[in-house]
Image 1: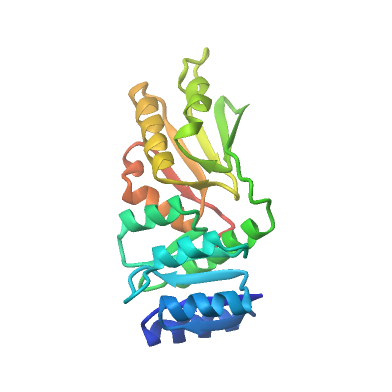
Image 2: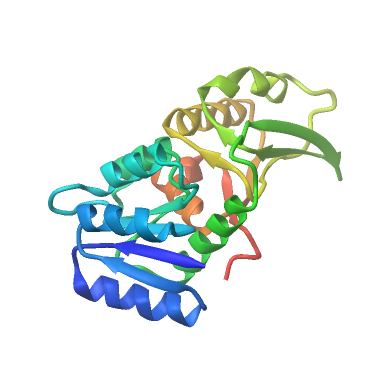
Length: 231
């Protein structure tokens, strides 16, 4: 598969080329947004990594233009450490994922795995929620893209259950994604559950979603568990 990396720092491009070539990808690089978009339309890559802050066209504008094209590429944003606001804005624009600089191999592997899986699924990624009981716990499976429009689906989750489960486990399927309003909604849900003294566990989080949920402060109200399949 072809992967395009857009970044104005040559050491970063060299690092990506080294890692991604070792993973078996055909790697192309560009040093700014304009050159990156021109190369994008020429090679039609399956996955694009783009730095967020670059002279000229920044990563968010690159993402916007890619989303307006007819090329179904997955886009992973490269951000500065702890730059949550811009990472969330990228998720609003349907970025596949984000990774922080300095890039860790674990984070890179996680982002690549999510992007590969998203490429295999239909673009319509409507949110869905399902509940099952197991060992006295309520397991709530979340899939698709979570945004504010999904609020009514959470009403049963917030209702009293008799007998009330010992824990409420939010299990995040591999195709789960979220935007800014979805993060606010999820925070509201777990806060209300904690007000009922209901223990909450958030399971099967990708490495990068685990980090963004920690930055949002969700670890103050729930136990966050990374997906066991992430390397």
